[in-house]
Length: 71
Image 1: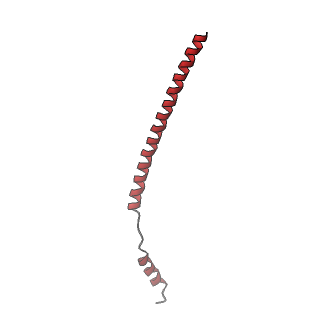
Image 2 (image 1 turned 180 degrees about the horizontal axis):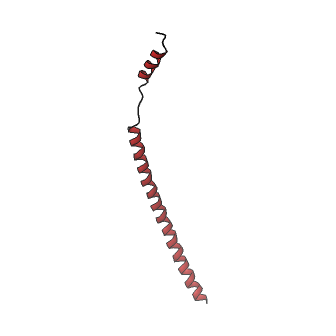
Image 3 (image 1 turned 90 degrees about the vertical axis):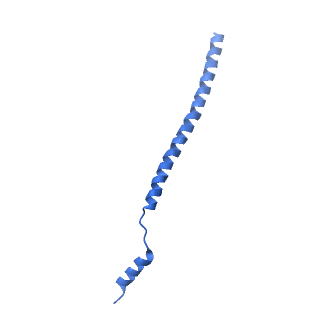
């Protein structure tokens, strides 16, 4: 009985080491996936910012002032 419990304890220790190693691998894979998704999201935002319409305020103010002037 004593030998069996030692053998089981050894197997449990090996299993816990494997599980711990797998959790580190899983954490690395998950962080790598998050980085990949972040890069895709960032590229999409950069494209949207490049195509974002810009407003020339001086031109708009000139039009508003012309509309509001009593001429």
